[in-house]
Image 1 (cartoon, rainbow, N blue to C red):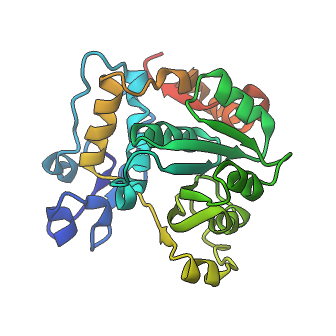
Image 2: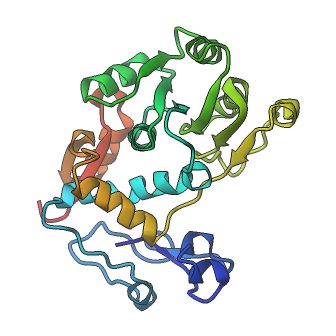
Length: 270
């Protein structure tokens, strides 16, 4: 079920970009009840918009849980996905979102460096076979300096901020190449979102900074197709499955870094 429900009448909705709805979209899990149940009521507006999407037989329900976050990743690439293969991408943050960004960057023909501030997460990413070309441990190496070393001093063509951090946003500008695209994909806390940035880096290096918010039906279908076709194997991300009555335990598992959780699933039928 696509979670984003637009007004269906504005220019963005008519283009199939309901996540950019001019009248502010509503979402399942926010304005409508979410999916932690065996059965849920789908709003009629969602049915009319085409939010009910058939899952192919070759895709398990567990794999289908990756479609929503993967579609958001694809939306994040929307402003710059026409780059020619061979460009360099840096993804900062090795959570499920960062890992999916690595997967999509490889689909776009990019060389990819994954940066994270703790080494266990990078070790886990390598263990599951994440296809990054370089794994940069920011607790040991200066990520900006390391990216410059790996790119002959040029910097990265695309930088994805997949961690909610002001320092990450500042570092993104410093490691970016001239004419680079930078995605502030991960938002900051609403009560602490002001960041001091060197605007001269943006000005003189002609940097392009993009936001990213939710996704739309077209991106759900693209994500589902990448999974169904086998081009992106998402099974490796599913580390834990809990029944509905153990939802509190599932949340604790996700928060406990010693559990090495990537994608934690609630199965109401378990």
